[in-house]
Length: 189
Image (cartoon, rainbow, N blue to C red; front, top):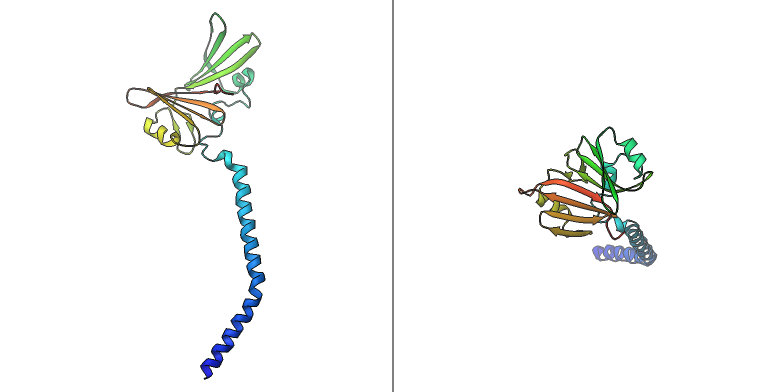
């Protein structure tokens, strides 16, 4: 009998607590809704970053603050060689560095030059968390980019990826090892 009284008292105590739990439930539901909204807001802020392997390929190989000819020449150290090739419709200036970088500029006027692309053949420059670059295997490049949130194109002995408004081309030798990387603006921008 005493057990029954204790049980009744404890059940009464629990039931009386439940009377207050309606407001607690509302608070919990409100907290879950707020948490969901915060996650949603964070997702929409960073959704463009999802799947991006390297945010700024140019910053890895170009030590200048911008892509102007003067800034690039001043910031990237001593030049190994410069040459200008005059094609019928335009001129290209090639600027070579000892570390395996080659900057290519389109020459509009003697004082107006635009960066077209950068070729990398040296192993000093690595991209992203997995540090891919010249010397990486084709399988490593595929593992990083294939099926991800980017535009991925595979050709014979070349893979092109467009991400972060940058076109990155990986060229492979007969052993399927990267021997050259080209960084340029994609044709669509």
